[in-house]
Length: 327
Image (cartoon, rainbow, N blue to C red):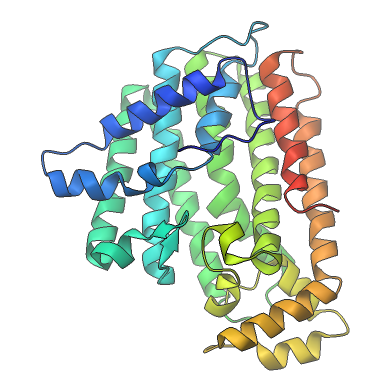
């Protein structure tokens, strides 16, 4: 089942996201039954469908009634979700992940080669769908896929680097996470025919929301359990992806001790010890403050938008994001 954050709700959003689910399954069908099964694996596992939700809300931003959206907007919402899922298939291969959304990952179930090809298939389907929505949407999604790759490369260049700069971390997050959330908002605005200034404001919202979203996600990797995350906690630490709470902790009074633990071949016990040090220091608190700044920027970008159910839903989504961690 798809879990929808209760605050991110338009009067018609449940209905529209149900249409997204049906369209997702239709778009990943192949003449090869096995490929259809693999491509549908994460769809069946569910998810919050944040990116389709952003696209749908952005499309309806000027509607005072909050009515159900047109079919082409559903198509745009599905296209951005297919890009997201394709990138997850590839990420799990690179990271050697064994679970995703509380189910076995595609690579763990069918092998790396199948996961890579299925991820390519999902990206191809997204590109095909985007092309049907017009040149501007197709160009936007193509550019966004490029930004996803750039963000990931930036991250890999800093693997096991305790001296990774906060600026490089933010540039990586901007590419690998915020770019697709910004694109989700812009796709909804483009397909709905909104004027350029409105599309730009929504895109700015999506980018700032995405920055806050990833920082919160990185905090949760440090403070949450496996069950709460739906995947192994502390995975980034073991893979040498030192995120904002880690980088800030390394710069604290416990930094020397933390550096002595971090590195390749981190055992589960060492990972737990490192996470404990990070939780006890200022890193989580300071990272939360950074997420709050980005969430405020997201809310500010909506200041001039009309007072509609969709605008209220976007504002609530930004506020609710920080509640995943708590202050």
